[in-house]
Image (cartoon, rainbow, N blue to C red; front, side):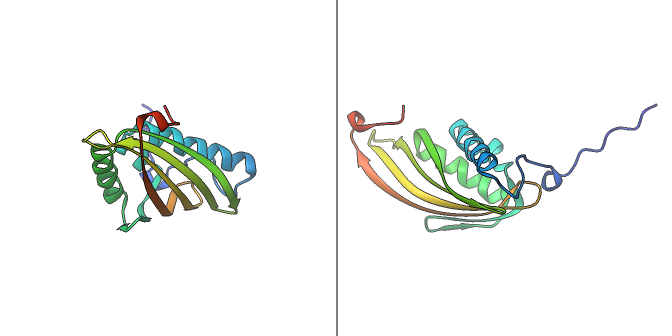
Length: 148
């Protein structure tokens, strides 16, 4: 009888690519983040972060994967038809910086474009252990949407 293959704990799982980043691997990491966030699946997105990941998102400070998951569920209940684009800004070692914009509408039908910058720091397994996000929201008309 063969012994079962051990399943690593979430924080020991490897999430490729891993640091140190090259331009190519940083671009892959950014695209993976964009794809995950556009899924609007808090469970899927949260798996990219360490169990003790630290976030600053606007004026919110989060300190665990569980808090991140709850934050994202709340976010996508409020930000309807969310669509995001990320662009690599810079990278070095275990850090990546991106600029982004996303569009969404609220329950009244008002559309918004949110612009921002994020700084990411990763552990050796490629999980994000720190995220700093600065974001500004601008009301737009449906005709001004760019991300569909």
